[in-house]
Length: 107
Length: 456
Image (cartoon, rainbow over all chains, first blue to last red; front, side):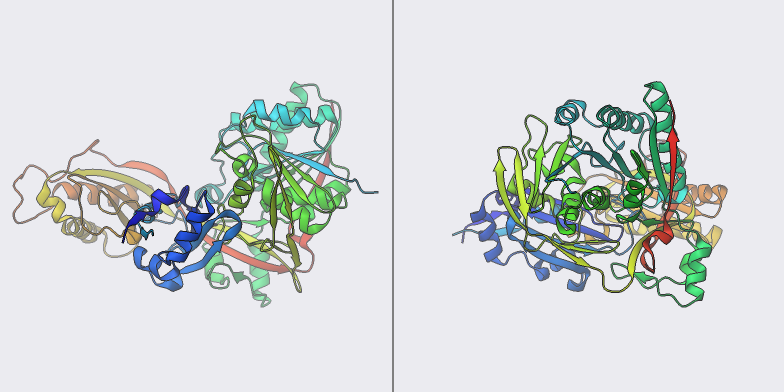
């Protein structure tokens, strides 16, 4: 089956702090069709994301398919609050790249 | 007598963090909005600024942005509201903004006006008394309730204001309001509610305006937007000639920096955006209907942010190019740790290694486990109670990367490359000790509003 990378389908893929204790991820599509395609593929779920990031699914506090914005959004609870000793990404803004290569089956 | 519509201008998503772009601000100001409102803070910047009570924004940028708002609003004779003064919204930051406003008034010979300001700082003694009385200060985002021990480790605490102190300041006749730490959306919701508009739309107005042009497309920060509220809808319009507020950009912005796009919590209740309807109103304007306001049941809960100092901090940097060393980098780190242990024991300091080229950015989340890079950069962070000790911890750890003992390494003159053969002092290490909510009988019990006359 033919697949495309998520980066080829989405307009925006980003991560960012959501408050002091969480990092939130947004995958936003320009076209409704591409959004629906990815949504229906079930390639992006609480479980697949937990697997990709090597965390327990319970660490994902929110997982939302947000139709008005053609967006899939999920949020991870940090193991330590942002900026704690040992921090590698204060703003949480470079945690999205593993999403870019998720393979989505197309037609 | 309430107005049919109210228009609020927002020039910047974080006043002073990067300067407001002037062209779109003046385009917006020319339309004579009813209020000029802006948020100036964030918890995004980490626990350091709150803990150390400093700004991260450049003073001249803060003054520049305040000047734009003050001159335009005073010329028009409409109110100006700023919340979360100086990044953290602490007392010292509010005082600094009040001082800037007074200076600007003098420099520009502005006619007399009333300036209100409030502090958001929370005294540790006050919280200790609450805990002693058995008040539960509930943790957010999975945190435990506040304990005496955590409170003790906290150096500085701010309460996040809802609309209450802003409404009070408007009641007092303020022309300019400088707020301590505040909910972003309250800065905009307060004047709308005060002017008689419905709570649901007022809070939504705040939600959509707080990041200025982040709700517009194409992407371009620090540009002005204007929000219009009526009794039945909210409209948001981009002022930059090339930006538009579209259904996609406004709905997309509902997600930004928030765990969930549907719910926004603040002192006094929650905004439910599940059933929001977005529609393109005109070329540059998106219209929104249908947000729901859910008032809090029981006592108002006010969010508290607290930061505590962990210790003094140094940073060391070491590069590694030998493929054998790269392959055994974990052993190198263990060797380095062991040398620090031999000098200082197991406790009383913290030592962290970020290994760039391996998983320096993502750490535990990094799905790529195998090192593919031909070179690595180790950033060593040493934290200890005194600067001297932090320096020595970091120095031993960094230099011992150079002396790492590996059985088969070819080079014997040093196993690390240094940019500088020293370790560098960094800002002290802090941590977010509090992300909690406190129940209060009166939301004003944490915020005291002061009013002064700024005379020519």
